[in-house]
Amino acid sequence: MLLWNRNRQIWGQITLVLISVLFTTYQFVINHDPFFTIDFFLFTILAWIVGWRYDLSRYYEKKAKDSEESYRLLMDSLPESIFIQSQCDNKLIYVNHAAVRMMGASNREELINQSFGEFVSADYIERWKMRVKIAINKKRPLSHIEYKMKRIDGSVFFYEASCLAIKLNGKEAVLSIGKDVTASKEETMNLLQKSEKLAILGEMSAGIAHEIRNPLTSIKGFIQLAKSDNPKNKYFEIVLSEIERINSIVGELLFLAKPTADVFLVKDIRNVIKDVVTLIHTQLSLHNIQIKEVYDSEIPKILCEEQRLKQVFINLLQNAIEAMPKGGYISIKGTFLGEGNISIEIMDQGVGIPEERISTLGEPFYTTKEKGTGLGLMTCYKIIESHNGKLCFQSEVNKGTKVTIIFPAAIQDTLLGTAIH
Image 1 (tube, rainbow, N blue to C red):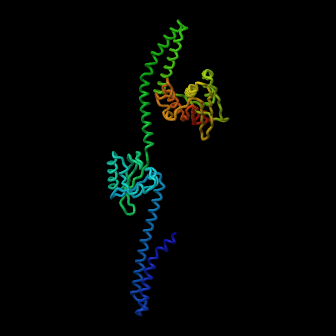
Image 2 (image 1 turned 60 degrees about the vertical axis):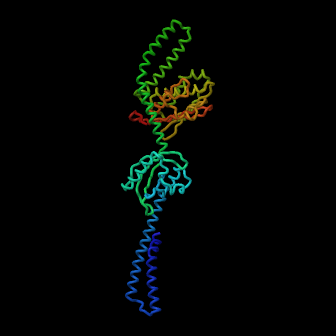
């Protein structure tokens, strides 16, 4: 390649020198002038210098074109969307592949020669014009800013981009580079809304939980006293059952408002689950439900607060039982995933959960149960999160639900007698 460039570099010199030699030869043959004269040497040297300058300019011109082509290839390979618009008329003169995809266009030609401003939403157009002016004046990259934009099909999205004044093909232009942030913006909004709900829930829980529990204890005592005087009245059992349900909800509110300081110890998750299954064995028999447990032969222990985890499994298994009023099977599978993680899967054959509701599971006061509060699953999410784990749901209506919990395995330090994960 270098040799080819060198050969190309002297073509102008050779051509002009040959012209000088041919002209002198012509004068020598036709007019019989001397061949080697001062004029011949002067013209030949001049031709050599002019040819050298010409070849040099051609070389740098080609080098610039190669460099520009390299930049284009680089920009086309970037995952960020790039728009380059002319400063004189704001028309797009270049877009990369990512920009074509983001705008929903079939090819570049749909965007080239269009004004970038045509794709900016009306309430953001002034912001865009101001940014272009600042980019031209500052001559340096500007910080990222968000625009509301429209695709070819008219759909709206949010584009976060930085601007820079550049030259392309000798023309003054403005480059915008950024990405579609619609999904992350929606996720942030959802997190903010969830955070607001949690804040409201926390304040409400702290305010009412104690106020409810105190009179509830008194009511429960009086009901039990009245029941002892009239043990055949079946309504006392119903009232006491409802009081226990209220007390359970208040307990969940207290945990959400102010989680206790738990002591984490290394435990075998299989033993924790077996204790829970034993605890709810009566409920399983009453609902004609059988549980099948399958575990890998070697499952690492985990660092956990045992009582909190039992609370999670009781809640999840009770949900599975309630989802199978006609009975059926619940399977519990424990798997060592490698890379320091284990998974516990709880699968039922229940009524299932509609797909559109799965994303809302764990939100306060959102539930698929007639008498539910949504606080039980929310508590489960918080407990699993405190164990550095993950809780996720998969479900199909009338076929069942699968709950997957991922735990980090504990690494036992036999010398120090401690556990880390």
